Length: 507
Image (cartoon, rainbow, N blue to C red; front, side):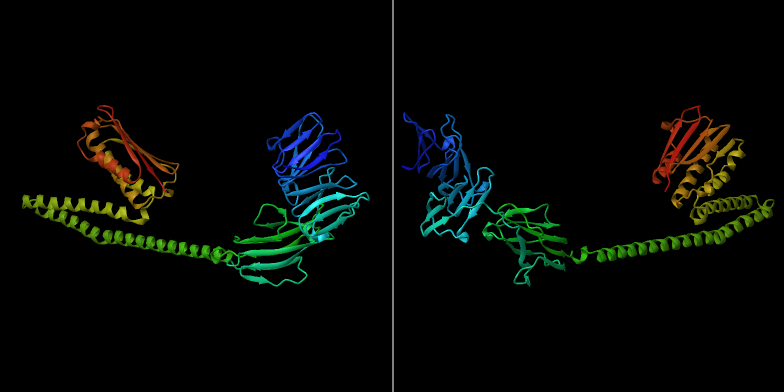
């Protein structure tokens, strides 16, 4: 059903259907345009303005055909996304200045095609309430609007730029509490520090200008909680249901119909305190408490180490002074008995000799034990000194012996386990050379580099095949090296001597 007619400058008759079809009659034939061609649905009115453009009022926007007489059909539709108050347009007219008046379901929008600026008129401006049915301009230039509840006349004048709006805070709620606000509103509120439980924030605001408040829009942001400005929109309220701890500043500005913002935004300053465990003083106390616990643990461990060292020293001293002296005494008495019974009873002489040998062996073994647990010997210098003493058996067999040590070995600290294992490895190696190598020379080289102790023991003796080695000496030395976290390798061949390489990590 055709409900609207218009004639363009070229004499074409345009007809609009409520269903959404648009017809053009050029005097010879009809041309039909549909929604597929961009025609808005629900056409209500057609209007040709002073520039020859065809405007289409519809329930789905304000349509525009720039050149209705052209063979090319081009349609543009304006909607609320372009700034209109509503997509439902009832009728269209024009004032003497060429501005288009689109009567919407929510008032009248005045659209200036030259600038794209839209100004809204509503009941707040004196427009009669109700649905606008018709709009027309009379010969005097006044624009009339007929509504279901009355008749309104607008005498268009040159637009006076609206004043820059101001804005005020009218309501503030933090958590469940309402902050007292002056009846005329506030422009700056300082709330200070708030407890963590009071992290719900809601604020209402209103703008003031010389144009209707309905024309104002609002932009706001929450510094510390958002990245940028929100809006502009028509909402008079901002709500933040759950804020994280930290400082905040809420800012709001009013924006008038010309897009001008408030010179000074209304402001609220506040901060949400972190929970007790997140505050600086609590963290400092926690750090101090942890430090105190660590220091107490350190002192406890240090005291235990000192006590252990004192026990080791006492044991070493007692063994040396008591059992060592007794064994030495046994060896001396055995020698004395040997001298007395040598001629009288040969069998007693042999028994006394065995007792003396056992006493001397026990004394040597005890000396090793005392040395190994004495904390005053926990460095490489004492190991080297002990090894030199053990090397006396090589010299007794005429084997040329040399030992190359690192500089300042007394500064190389060893644990009791390292000292014990190193000494026994070197001692076992020297015993093997003395008993099995049949060599002319032997050499021990000790070096310390990159927190590692490296030792090399070589001889020029008969060597051996490691596969044919049936003893436990080499296996025990490798086991001791592994217990220190190190490694020991042997390079040996029959008739070519033996080379032992030892690597031990140091602390």
